[in-house]
Length: 127
Length: 371
Image (cartoon, each protein chain N blue to C red):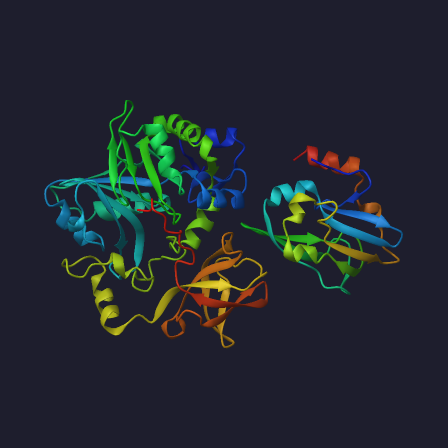
């Protein structure tokens, strides 16, 4: 499983790329592999405020719908409209073109609860 | 008490191939191998192979089998010659569906019934309790494995495997193949809307034939396929699924299956309600629903609205890989079942527009080789 070293990870298989007070969020290679073919992404609404661990959007494969959880507290600042036309980007390029949304991180946002690449890889090794 | 899902003779083969497995109707089955979308497309454009060993096989024999079967089932077995099959339904006394199945006449007074996996015991008990003393009914489900080879290239695969001397059956026909480790029965039937064959062989030869068929299909880019693709394919083809679209409370006329109910053959179980429905019309009908573009896929048990009022719920639903949008089935009041009628399907609290569509929503293109 691909686990890039420049990201932080949630236990629920979302990744977060931090850039000052902005973050980009998507799902991991493990998550897309478990989902199988993604056929629909219900994107969050720009301006939505979320807490860490709060359900924020839904990703659907042929057989099931899966909830996606925000790894951090903040406000949704941008969503990846490319996923409307091509939801399969989540499968083919989960860490780049398949990004789902961007967050304006809350001032009190605490990323220390997220996992390092090593810790996430450790989590995957137990599955 | 057996709690674990039952395994088909091919479950080890599936697991060794890396298939994703799940429990379905009490059976441990492959959902997908390469991926549902890839497998679906393979069947539509070339050929795919499914394990259908979980399905059941019942044998009926004896003098007057024909008359008895015509009293138990909705279709007319008098239309069958040797080596011919027909789709038919087993109804309860209220005219609701117990099971849908295909019955083949092997020869006079000898019939082979292929029934749904989840209903094997129920079908057998129902028929056994109603059988005339001189007839025989045997449940041979454990002895048979089944493989479904489906797609426009399916016949090419079989010709390569069997050689040109073997004459393949025509649609709904059944061929008995004299092979060592037989018998092998090959029916030109399927649940995908494509040309194809259902291959029944002794359970202990399942892996042998699975591998031989995959080998023969290699140059045609055959893919092993799971239940995920089986569902998207049959939904596109407009075939109902027992337990979802068919149920003990819905009649076959409500389900749009009147072609498989024959009223000129005498009495059969469930007839009373159907006679009433024939003269008065049905109050609700099973229709296809076609979602608009870019909606979440519809799934079973989603509410359906017409002019803002709830009118039913989906019985089946999925993304249609061929059409690129969601498709579903639902029983709607008869007065809103004209194709094109606008409705809404509620998915996770939001309503999305859909239209009533004629079934099937996919038809295979006619080719010179079509049968």
